[in-house]
Each structure stands twice: as structure tokens, then as C-alpha cells.
Length: 384
Image: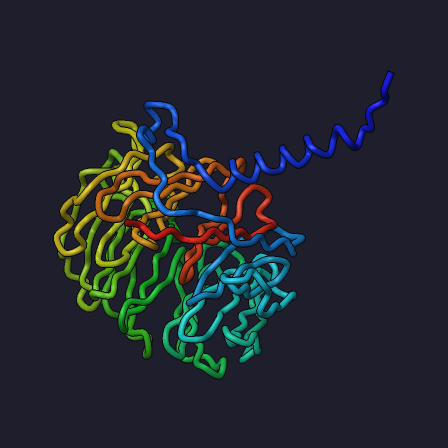
């Protein structure tokens, strides 16, 4: 009886299995089962995996992008060329950090209490501020200023500090509440606070300041949950609790300079909004209807289209827009809807949870999933 080599049998099976996993990961060309929102799914364009960056021993906690560069909190902070997947530079001493990029500067807010500013192109350390009890909860970059929120360690109050391009303190604010989010639209800096000294009241606010001087402008109550997106048109969009006893949500458009209400929409329980390409995208999930993604006219709040989502998790994650598509994550998937119509166009089944918001560069969709130790890049398609 002829003997068969174990290697001769195992090797073809291993190769076949590897190819099967690769195509299952990169493409979803067949329609999904009816009823899950993906009936008649059609793949247009070609989503090819470009590269995988596998140098991390710790999970990625955050990614941002600028131009054709991806910045990820791998074992430290790493800049990756989105075209080749090659490392441009790395600073290994900044794990579990919050990061923000803007105007050629990468701000890194470390968990151990340091705040560092790097040249985004070269990785050169520009300045560093240290000595805080707990690292920044949020960070933003605008012009020659870096903004960071810092805790005093008691979880009931925090500080907002603005630093100039030399790392010197430009202005400072102390809060009797935790800061959830900070951002900038035009010359207005906004801050979303959470709770306060009396957490039973669950009162929170959107507060705004002059970006340069720190002078107070106006505030808007968000009642415990305020999630903000901004637009280049000088408006701030707030998805927040309405303050009613039923715990319903409301979406409000505010003038960034005056705080005047432009419009409000309470038709859905809105989640994280995103402003992109003169359109406002926002998720909705409640007990009355399935999870959906909505596109709204940012000037009027008028609904342009709705798209059924595969699960409630997809409604909670902010969307990302690129190449004529709106990308959003679900339970182990990345999905894409047509920017103009809302028709679902593509899905990648990843086989693991997406814990970090994907980012887009000039021609790539970059993401991580599962144990979040590898950054992947897919080529963006050309949508006809």
C-alpha cells in the first residue's frame, strides 16, 4: 500500500483555507439573507486589500488620518503611509493615548498625564507638557493651538487647557463636571460636559468659547448626553437627550457664533452625527423601529434618505464618508451605502468586532478589528 506524506496532504488544504479566509475577509459579493437589510446587495468597484501592518503588541485604541498618512496608537504612536503600508515614523513611549491631527501637528494625550505635540510629517517632538494626575480625556488641534481636557483624579471635575505652538499655556478653564468631548468650528471652541457635582440631575451642557482668548460665548443644555458634529458652514449639530421624562433624543442645529437654534428634529432617537460633503449623517435606534442611518439636509434638517442597518451597534458608530460611499461599522462588519441614495452597496464580514472607528485617506479605507493589533487597508472603489 502506497504511503502518503502528511505534508503533501496538509499543504494544499492550508493554502486553500488561507485563500478562502482572504476572500471572505475582503469581499461580500453575494446577497445576504433576506430581511437583514442587505437584499439585492451589489458590489460596484473593486475593494482590494492593499496591506496589513502587524507590528503592534498592544491593541490599537485610536486612529486618525491626514492626507495619505494614518496615525495609530499601536505600541506607541505610529505614522503609516497609506499607499504602501510602510512605517513613516514611530514614537514608542505613548501607549493607550488619545490623538488628534491638524495643521501639520499631531497631538498625543497619554494616559499617564503627558501631552505631546509632534510634527505630523517627520515625527519630530515639538513640545511636551506633563505633571497631570490623570491623562487627557479629549484632545483637539486647531491652527497653532492644542486643546486638552484633564481630570483632577476625583472624576467630578476637570480642566480645559489651551497650549500655543511652543507648548506654553494660552488659557485655562476649570469645570465642576467631566468633559466628554472638545472640538473647534471656525473660531469657536466647543466643550461637551457630562454630569456635574450632582449626578442625579444628569445635567450636561454644550459650552463654547473664543478659540484664541478663551472668552465665554454661549451654552446649550444637553441633559446628560451630548454628542456633537461640526460643519464648515458655521453650525454645530448636537444629538442629545430632550430633557423629557421619556428619555427621548433630539437633534439640534445651532449657529456656532451666537448659539441660536436654527432647527430641531425629534422624529428619531438620534445617535452620533457626522457632517461631510454638505450632508449630515446620523444613526437612530430605539424600541419602536429598526436601526437606521439617515441623511439630512444640514440647512433645514429635512430627511433626504434612510438606510436600514444590520444591527443596533451600526447605529451607534459615527459614519465615515469617502469615494461616494458612507461607511459604517456593525457587529463584525464594515458596510457601505451610496452617498446619494442610501442604497447599501458593500459589506465586509470581518469575523471580529470593530472597536476603533475606521478612517479614510486619499484612496484607502483603514481599519482594525478582532484583537485590534493589526491595521488593514482596502483600496477605495470608483463608484459609477
